[in-house]
Each structure stands twice: as C-alpha cells, then as structure tokens.
Image: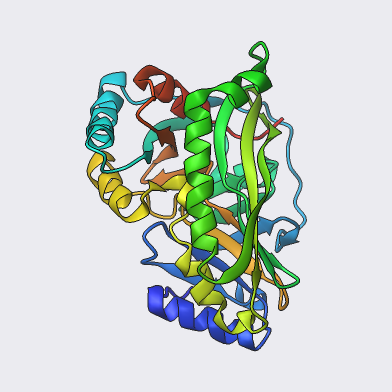
Length: 326
C-alpha cells in the first residue's frame, strides 16, 4: 500500500471526491502517514475493514474457543507522573482539557486477525501484523450535504448503582463533555454553516468481554456548500486530530500531550472511514490493540480536567482495556 503525506492525502481525497470514486482511508494521529485506496485495490490479506457495513470481510468460520484476556496495567506511579505534568499545565491555564493516554501490555490466545473477526463493533479495522481496532466512536458523517460529528466523552461501568444518573450528574464529566462539544462545534464551522448541537449528552450501552459500560456522546451538525466533494480532503484534515482524543485549546494541548505521554500514538486516535461516491462515514481509532515485536499493547486513556482525580482516571484507563467479544 502506498503511504501518503498530509498534503498528498488531501489532494488525493479531493480528486477522488470530485470524480465520485469510492475510497477507504486510514490516517494516523499526527497526519504523517495516510492510506487512501479505492476498494478494489485493497488486498483483504493485508487490510480488513468493516466500517458501519461498508466492508471487504471474506466469509470465515469463527471458532468457539473461550477467550483468554489478561492485562498488565502500567504502575500507578508511572501514570501519576504523566498526570501530574498535565495538572501543572491545567493550573497554569495552558489548557482546559487534556486527553491523556498510555499503553497496557496484553496477553491473549487470539491473533490480531482472530480478534478482528470475533469482535462486534460499528467500526473495525485490521492491518496485518500491525494493529486491530474496534471503535464505537463516529468521527464525522457527511450525508445529503450535511456534516455530522459525534464526540464521545464520559464512561462508566453500567453495573454501578444508578450508573446513568451518576455519569450525567458528574460535574467533572459534564465540564469535560461541554469543552469538547464547543471545540468540535468550532471545528465543524470552518467548512459549514448553520452549525448546531442536535443532541447533547445522550447515553449508549456498549457490551465488552467484561460486562456493559455506558458512554456519553453528543451530535453536532452543519450544512456544507454544494461543491463539498471537491474538497473532501480539506474538510476532513481541517478537523484533525479529533478533538475528543486531544483536548482544548487544541494546538497547545497537543504540545502538552507530546511531553506527557511516554510513547508514540501512531495510528491510535487517528481516523478511518470511507467515501462511497456520494457520502462519507468515519470513526476515531480508539479501542486499539497494537503488535510490537512479539508483544501486544492496548492503547487507552481519558480526558483530564482541573477537577480530575488521578486514581479515578487511572482506573478509567484500565476499564477501557477490553475487547467487545460476548
């Protein structure tokens, strides 16, 4: 597969969009590497995808083995060092919200491709010997001349008493969600008009191998101009990286993330999606399992605000290390 830099990727998307030629895309967090291919040119032996029903999955038999899934969370002290650096910037007013992430070593009896076939998620991607992602989070959808974004912020174990009420009434979670909605609304307004929040802080259930969790999302929409397909690349890249996995204000927060995290995100928290010749659908690359050498590492995290508690954020990061196999 050919790798494209940022400017090349924008140009290729614009050309394919103008010509109404379908394509699938993968873009990394820093927008340094992109894969943009027409579906007929994608080898399913190298790149598998199921993007909200748009798929190249071959028919395969899935066995019924019991899934072994063991994690080794990083030490709390290591997480606390990164958290403390973020809090320093929050106290200084350099940022209002930082999405802090880390890597968790994982062991399982399944290969990356087996995980891809057995997981259940709205958006799934497998890149041979590199990673598998099973994301529940929509990035943007473009349909009938309108653009929609669905930032996801707020997670809680559904088994907790009054879980839905607790997550919606949590002041820290509410402030974090409001910040991201405001950021995404501003991002969307760059290429659209009549931007509005269609739904605010609605709750969805997600099934995992370790039970049900609740996630809080909002829906933001705007109207595009009639020639939007000729600059699909410009529209998409103007929104990157996704606000829900960075923070606000975005540029300064990106610097803080770079000095606080002890690893490279790579494709984690990038985006994937497709253009079918008419409309576009895409997802944020979260719930992400990566192969490094002979080891597997799950990347996860959460939003940090001035009201965050280090231990609670550490536990949330661990809670997100799951596979949706049930």
